[in-house]
Image (cartoon, rainbow, N blue to C red; front, side, top):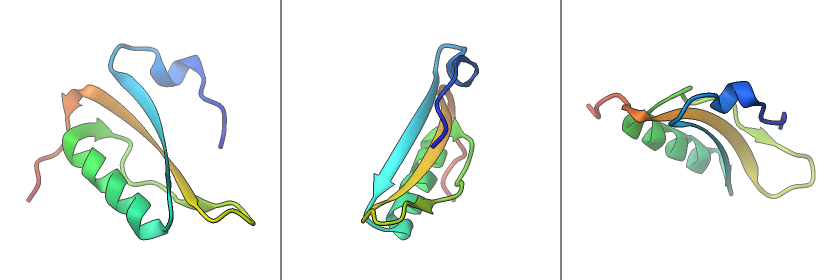
Length: 71
């Protein structure tokens, strides 16, 4: 994954979360749950590195702003 620069977390409350899980469904479920709690960049792409057992994703979030309400 690309390095995290200052512009990604320039304001209080902004975070970058790197999520690692055993399968794509699990990682997507975590990203969706975070989206309900905080304002996030949304469910993004999930990647698998060759030879690695896990999948990874990155989410940008503002923990000071609420996410969308669950249906």
